[in-house]
Image 1: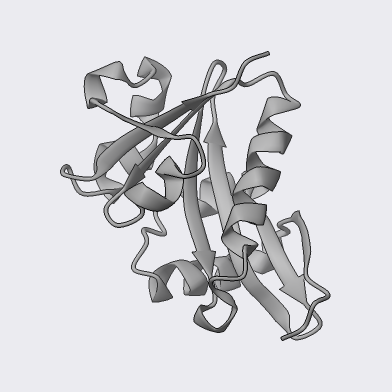
Image 2 (image 1 turned 90 degrees about the horizontal axis):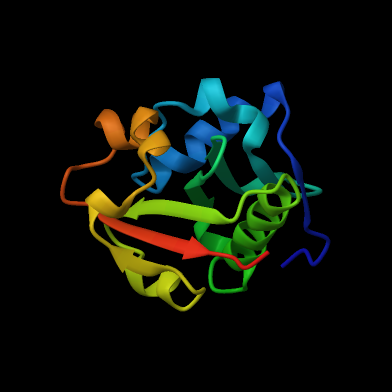
Length: 148
């Protein structure tokens, strides 16, 4: 495996590959076009092998679209992508992070996220495509609050 994996901000040219990765992982692509500026991508010399995104609002952010090429899974790359997103958002002053998942609850629990009811979600996030229609209504909602 190529150890030279860099994680950097996505560019407009990365959007089709981000959508490919998401589709291959059965994740929604709705909202990617509007929010690509908050995405990060993991690159090797061969191209993009992972991605992660967020939708940032004034007081909270929705972490979304964490996907890693199957051949590069279980090597900590997803964790690096999530950490990069959280660090970037925290540097903008955000401290509340939410996500919706249908199959990664345990993964995110290990990273400090806690399961919550949808009525505990910051109201700003209900404007996101994920909450409106991109994620199934039975998706598990999780929150991470970082101390300042």
